[in-house]
Image 1 (cartoon, helix red, strand yellow):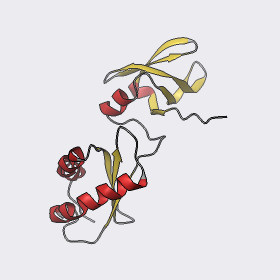
Image 2 (cartoon, rainbow, N blue to C red):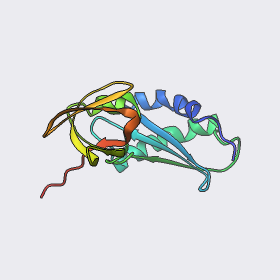
Image 3 (cartoon, helix red, strand yellow):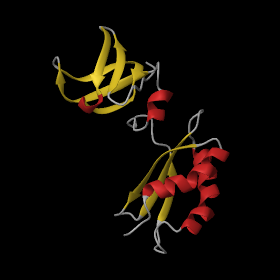
Image 4 (cartoon, helix red, strand yellow):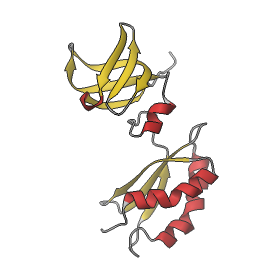
Length: 153
């Protein structure tokens, strides 16, 4: 199905999100399911009530935008999940000084999985503090970086 550009849809929804203290993390189209999913985040996290309120707030305006050119679709609003990969500079900023998990495309010193505290980042590198010390990694070597998930034992 032909849909409007994702960036246009995201941009259209930004003002509504900002007025509700919500950040749009990502917008995805699933062609097989004919579904548009808006992933949101707030400073205090995302729960079902937050998703429902944002869904209700964008339902009519997005129909006016007509992202699918009068074709039927399903609108979903969701949390991106605890283990979602960092995609934007804001994702990295939000997680500075927090523990992260990094999966590399190829092993480095025999390891393909690293964990440490995110201390710095730029367009080309990510710096983490591990038990062995500070480690600077080229971003093009990183397959996935996300917040470390710790379970109480």
